[in-house]
Amino acid sequence: MNDDKPSSDVVLVEENEGAKARDGPIIELFKSLITNDYKENTVLTNAQIIDILQKEFNINIQKIHDLEVEIYVNVVKKYLKDWPEWDEFEQSVIDFKSKNNNKAMTSILEEKYLNLKKYLGSMLEIAKYLSPDIVNNIPITGQMYKIESANKENVVMEILATRKQLNHLILRHPIGNNSIFNVNEPLPKYYNYPNSLTLDSILNWCGIEIELKLKLAQGGVINLKYENCHKLQHTLVNKMLKLDSYQKSSLSQQWEVKSKRKKLTEISKAVILNLFEQCVSNDRYQNWKPVLVSMHKILNNITQSMPSSIGVPGTFRKYLSKYGYVRFLYENVTDEVTNAENEKYDLQLQEVLSPMCQLHIELYPYSSHESIKIRCNFCQVYFTGENVSWEIEDHFKSHIVEPDWQCVNCNKAITMSHLTRANWNHNCEPASLYELLSMKQ
Ligand SMILES: [Zn+2]
Ligand SMILES: [Zn+2]
Ligand SMILES: [Zn+2]
Image 1 (tube, helix red, strand yellow):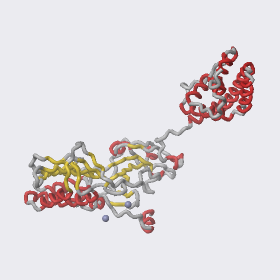
Image 2 (tube, helix red, strand yellow; image 1 turned 90 degrees about the horizontal axis):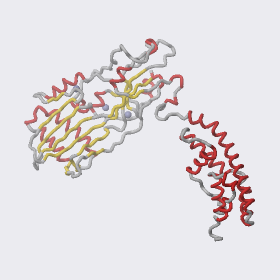
Image 3 (cartoon, protein in one colour; image 1 turned 120 degrees about the horizontal axis):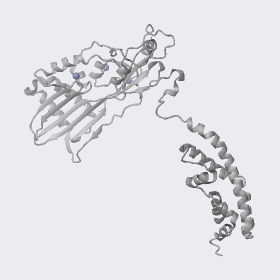
C-alpha cells in the first residue's frame, strides 16, 4: 500500500454491498473526506449541493423559483457545517482507519449517513415550509418607484408617457365623473403670460434650428448647426400624494462629443466667432443681422467651456443649466373645485425638462456656397424671407402660451420668457423664508 494514496481505504469500503446500495452524493462526500484524511474545511460547490438536494431530498429544482433553490442551497451549506456529529465521526474514522477495521468503517458510514440526512432533512423541511412565501412576496423592482413612502390607501399609479398621450388620458376630477380617464374633456388650459418674446428667447426656446454655411478665409465653408434640444419627461402624477417624483440631482456640465469620422480637423473657436462678427457687419446679411447678433451671443456664451481649438466634424452637446425644471400643465385644483372632502386625486401632467443645446460643426473644403437658414422643428417651417426676424417673431406668437417652470433645486418659479432670455439659466438660490411663506398661501 502506498502511503501517499490512502484511497485504497475507500476501495475497501466499496467492497461492501451495503455501502454500494447507498451510493449518493452524501456518501461520496464522506468517502472524499476519509480519503483526504478528513479535511474539515472541504468546500462544496453549489453544483454539488444541488446534487445533494436532488438526489438525497428529491427536490426538483426545475420546478421551483431560482430564489427558492438558493435558499435550500444555503440551508444545506450552513447545516452541513453545523452538524454536531462531525467531531465524533472524525474520531471514529481515524480510529478505524488505523486499526484497518473495514467492517466498523462501513457501519459508521451507514450510521452517520442516516443521521446527517435526517438532520439536513429536518432543516430543509422548515425551509420548504417558509421559502415559497418569501419568494412570492419579493417586491417587483422598478414598478413601485418612490411609492412606498406614501400612504398606501392614497396610492394611484404614476404613468410615463408622451405629453400627447397623457393629454388624451387625463381627467382632472375623476370623483365627480367617476372615471380616471378622459373621454370628453378638452385639452388643458395653459397659463398665458404677457411678456413679448425677444429674438434671443425664441432662438433659445426649443427645437429652433439655425444652420449657417459661412466661407472660411483659407477657403472652403464651415457648416454650423445650432439647436436647443432639451430632454423632456412626462409623467401622469397625482399631486395629492406630494411625491415629488422627479430627479433633483444636478446635471453634468461637461460637453459630450460625437464624431462619426476618425480623422478630425482642428479648428479654432476664435475663427468661428470672428466669422460671425464679419457677417454682422456684412451688408449682404443685412436682414439676418438681428439673428446673427443673437447667435453670436449664444455661441460666445456656450463655447466658453470648450477648449480653444476643437476637432471637427463633430456634434457637441451640453446641459445648459446645473438643474432641470419642472412644471405641471394644468392649473392647480382650487378649494372651490375640490368638492368631495376626501378627494384623493389631483391628476397632473408633470413635465420635467433638462435643458440641452446641440452644436454640429463640419467643414466643406471644396464648397464656396454661403447660406443661413432657420426653422421651427415643431412646425416644420423655414424662415428665409426678406424680413426674417419679423417672420420668426410673428410665427412665435403661436408658441408663447406656456406654463411657468420651477427649478427642481431652488423651487423658484420662472417664466418661459425669462428662462429663455438667459438660455435656461437663472440665479439658483434657495428661496428666502419670506418667499417660502408667501408661496404657501
Ligand atoms: Zn413653430
Ligand atoms: Zn433673470
Ligand atoms: Zn434654481
